Image (cartoon, rainbow over all chains, first blue to last red; front, side, top):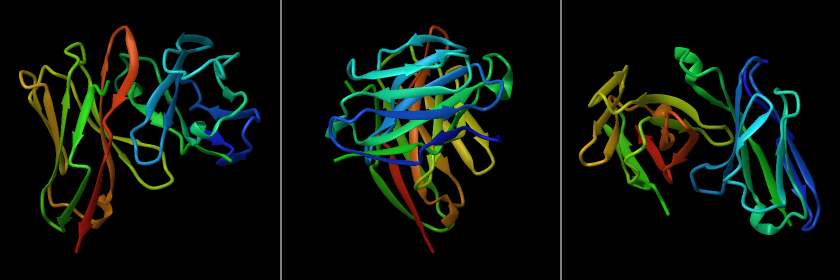
Length: 117
Length: 113
């Protein structure tokens, strides 16, 4: 596709349920990021992949959050035993190889809006 | 700890006027400063970015002014148009060794006719 694709667009979960959010980055993009955006706030970094390697997961708020990118393309963010404070928009972004001019731009998807009831 | 502070929280500008949004950062290791534009229901989109080796960068109606000694940078939108109504985020990162962006809290810009 032409851009970063995220699914589902909206997810409603009951407290305690597990959820999985999918990100399809731009084809060929090496770097993939997950951000969490609370209502009325700026995005906050969760984790970063370079190809299939998770190089930084310092932003994951708890061990209930887990991300993977097994083949260096599609990534999944999993949240176990969801809590109300997990309600937010989860944004995925991808970027080409650094040092390649326009390929340094970070492209965001439209996000998955997660509501935990 | 909020490493990038953004102001104002909201801004109303008349069509044709200049919109100015300000950001201040704390971490002197930051060396990449982008501005993102976000429309409701969409992800942020890169508008313009600057590195600290220059004090100003202009792209069309958008200009970033950068003051390294004050650790401040600002976005100026000239000839503001209703289509510019959106939320704007400043951000900062270290280019080498740490890829993540630290975002400001956002400015909701409304351009009125």
